[in-house]
Length: 459
Image (cartoon, rainbow, N blue to C red; front, side, top):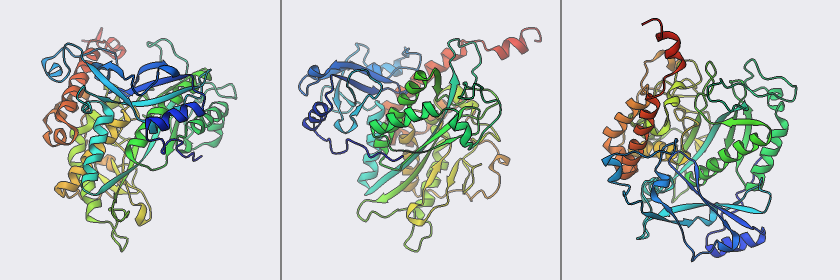
């Protein structure tokens, strides 16, 4: 299914007002993606949603952890003012979509965050991605991305102490074995997916193929390639839509990186290429069809900087459970052509579609942050002309681990990598690392079943 974005021509507030009138909208959900990718904001009656009204939220709303807590550190408050000042929110008219599951005609619009002087709040996720895309544009380059997003369908589970399990399908049974690429396994959930595709069509989300992934109840949806900001918005909307659709069918949908022990984790693979804005040509290919220096330098940048950027691609303690040998997830940043054991893959494609697939990123990553991270690494490779390692032509699982094994280790690496700070912004790195450190400390206060089982009476 390929539904054109219904709103690229909506560029001004006047255009937006006309769209709302055409769709007889009675309520507007004013959304702001926070650092975890959660939709924050306000719901306004249509008549209150006016250009001159202005909407405000405390700046800490986009700078909190997944538990809703805030760091109480000097480093955090060097960026976030302790007196809880407001951000000024401005709608991006091109993001307007209908909310297809709402009872009354309701629109959802993503907003950008500005300070009182009219400058973008630099630690808001959309601001970070916008800045990285601007760096590319200043060089005459146009980044193009295409995400592949994995997720699990689960039986409802209201008790966090109970193990998660696959849901019941049309047959009345849950999956008990792996059904990779099975059409019949997808058809078990036809009512859910029919409604999901209907919602995506109404919202103009450019979703492509749907497949059953390796895990029991694990699915993958692919998006058509486009500009990074537009696709980050679409992933943001899609996650929300999948979770809502699953609930309507008495299931949960989760983008946790590793929700079920013994099953593969879920990734957000991002395919990337760079266009020359003047000519429209793919910078990764020469006129004779061979790969260009830019192709190799982009890979070199990913290899050089991904280990230090892992806290952005694997943002939670759970994220690092996914990165294990022989689980369809990488353990290092080797690269290779048509090789799914590496962290950086170049799929088979014609020269004009030559691209680089980052397979390291988890499905739990904020799409704005994840795209900023991978494009920042590639940008540094292009700018510094970083050569890649020799291509891995065999099984990359036989090579050593080359990625951090925990969130704590990843945060230490990110704090030390000043090149990434310059591209992504010091204030963003500061706020992000402090929030993740706070989450990590909260997790360390929890005693796990493994510890009670193996340590209680044996040590």
